[in-house]
Length: 352
Image (tube, rainbow, N blue to C red; front, side):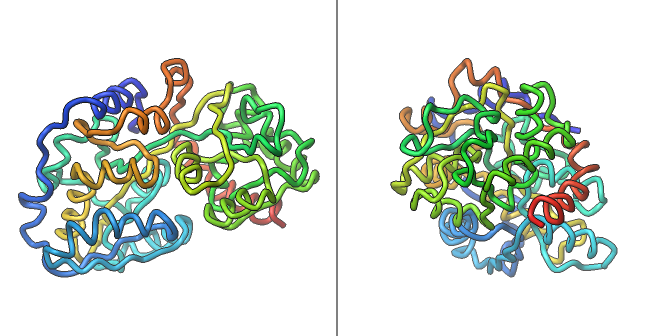
């Protein structure tokens, strides 16, 4: 199992602030058969829109590649991938998942073991973002988000977020159930464990009783923050930057209990019908221009070296040296084993 080493990650980010290195935008074997079709499984909303804006329209469609997005939450897309794994040909070529879910799909035997010779731009990929079964596309860390007008004093971590005193000003994002339960475990154990699910459940049920609200998507939660319907939650720091840029009143706090790392990446289905085009898609997402664009448009850190990121932006999307020490890797094996149970409890008990 591949872990995220924060020193390597931050080394790569630091490199991004320096001189730009030459990287091929597209090329090599990855584009040898790029004409045709590729079906991309992804979340909807902003991420899907920015994949189109920064990767598909400028780099792939001019090469004759027809991109079709299969938009859905990660749980149904994972279920479909597992259900189709024994078919000669699946229906989706490349899937976007968190690092934890990429690990899970590999354990399920549904992913292609990557041939990195077909991804020329992967030569610049940070070592910690290079998995045998997938690549990291962007990364950030989970932080507390709050509106200073509604929440005072400022929170210091997950325990302050999950304090029943905030009542219906506490917000949850449905599709982030896994990250929420990790944060609740850290709150319950003062950062000692990300895997104490039973203690996490106790804390979450207490805030549910106090009136906490659940929103179906990141976008729905953002609207609630904008309207001051809710005032505190937890989300990737990249999202805080994006919402600040959109004029939503919010600030970020790196939790004292630790900062869970978040990596969003892509895997290729073992039975992908357009495998060469899936490799072409991976190669394009690692090109310099889209990597820098995602930092600007979405506030995520890139996963390749040699990026040119403005110092003021790097300060907003990155972490201080003291915060770097609190970045924590996720236990992908634990999450793969327990995700189904976590999701069932979330849907039937917490939301029920």
